[in-house]
Length: 119
Image (cartoon, rainbow, N blue to C red; front, side, top):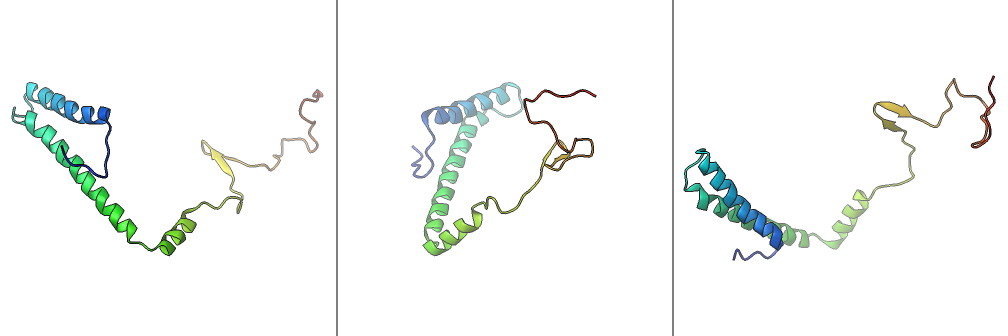
């Protein structure tokens, strides 16, 4: 009915948009927060927003198609994350976690699974 070409909401989403807008308008009217003319106007406003979203998506897709392939490749190279270049310590709840040994840790710890000696 709206002639959507780029935005494709499914059946459930269409139901939620339309029936949800009608239910919201009826509840607002029953609470006397708005006039009763809001009941047909609110679903119409939702339909206009969905159509506007479709028009914006069309413009974005057409403008992206005008960008040369070389520029798209350069942009992709800039956006790709670089892994393994620098070591960054991780933090958890404001505590710095490092692999350095603390002053309370023994110099030569027992291997994992070995029985611990008590002093």
